[in-house]
Length: 364
Image: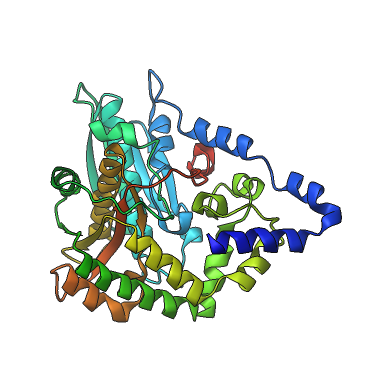
């Protein structure tokens, strides 16, 4: 709350009294932004095509909301390829997060295909940098329950209410995330959650002291509805509970108001307010397994959405290599690399993050 007030004050001071109205107009309309996000989340059409399935794939979770994917359709085949121009080489030097993001998009396509009456076969092709191939077959199939959550799922980067999650719902989350080659550890006891919190804070301190990391993060920040709609990507400040700022003022406000201490305090509060933590660990550290992790975590997130839960990624102990062994120990996976760290709990809804259109991500 303090940080939000500071950003509001900083934004007004930077704009200046004489130009407030003009600048507010240039920020864009949240109602227009909300309408655009609703269009992207419209129900599946009566006779869906592979292009319709791709629209649901674009709603998947992904690192920094870079949406590092390209899609190609050949008949009833959908190919999901890395978009190397959207790499984040500082935070993700080996493209781990990129392939996890492709896995999240893959799972959304699989679920949308099932809803549309297609059976599917998914395979990973390691050639040419690696791509995911989804072969579709029009055949009557059972409609997947998780599909209904795709249009409502969001990463909620805010505080939750601390309410615990029941054992049956924890079991449902674990069951939804089952995937070959992927293990999941769910932590709900306070002592171990505090240990994870300490790792998150330690990792955040390392990252916020890295100028290259901060520069890369700022590159993907979007400070107002107009900017978010124009780019269709990035971390939209309003979707994290912060106010809109002019695009020119946002980076300055970030430099003035955001520090390792403010971020550490924020993450500590968020973790204290969470009901539990999920740690995903693959059997091997390669692109094919990272895609599997993405599929598992997407299913976890969709099941959480169906249960009325919120979730958010807190991957600092994954991204700072020196902290990975400690996180692996907490997950009961000593000697292996932890792949993803998520918190979950009951909390408020915020505006959706922006997404690019199907036309922007579809190769012809």
